Image 1 (cartoon, rainbow, N blue to C red):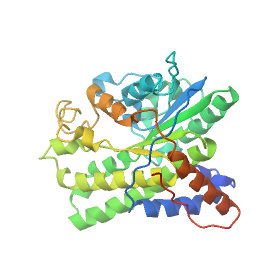
Image 2: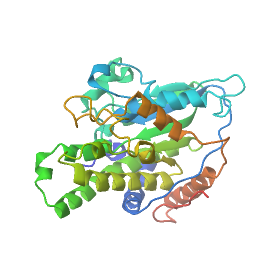
Image 3: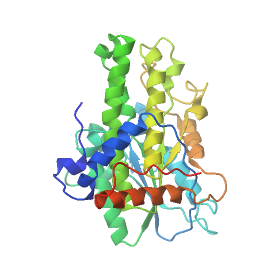
Image 4: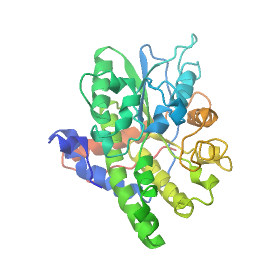
Length: 336
């Protein structure tokens, strides 16, 4: 698999290009990191926008029979946006729900995030209604700029990515013929490439929106409900590692990781379509109830505390040092 990052692809000589080595360092570090960042304060803001990014989990895809075109105000994004519209979520006494802009693309992986190769973008009307094709990365950056120009504030960004990088292995018959050690080696290679791409995207969001809450949603393992699946044995260690690296990226860039495995534990078959959407074992997406529970898992109890700002302050300090040639890597400050 090639590694495709938006900044390098366009020959960008700006901040993202300069930080490429730092992002690779974060990817390597994240493979061994397991962290949880604290909650953020979220004041009520007029003209609030919630930006959602990622794959079919973020888009809210359920089954082939429900695969209708939409703007993506569905799934866990809808559930979380509803909560953001409450007083506890920063919606103020009148309960002002933020504008939802969901750019997620069903089938997207960490490489196609930077190009237009994933056909699933046709389900998302943010792409379908455009005269020209555009990658999710480029539309993300365009959206951030247009919202800023309009005087709106993107104060929440959620992200689900890299699951399809692993799913590609699960769908590869050659992978199933490998020994366990060979499978592990290939998983590590794929994950390193994926997390490098993911870290580049999260860094771009953090640079563009230094005050926003960034939420990285993890993955559950639906294959635990299918013991006779050919990927049953390999799936759990691979998903564990994926969630660890996602948590590491969250920590490095002042984001909040949401672990959803506990929500689905023992109920993977009930809360996903893995057993009921034919052929059984092929549809890994949550049901409506599964998405509702993911949305609840994203909610921070109470008004929140500003410990996440400590992480951002540390990251920004490291970024300034790297721009001045005074530092190496990324400052991995953690919330408490």
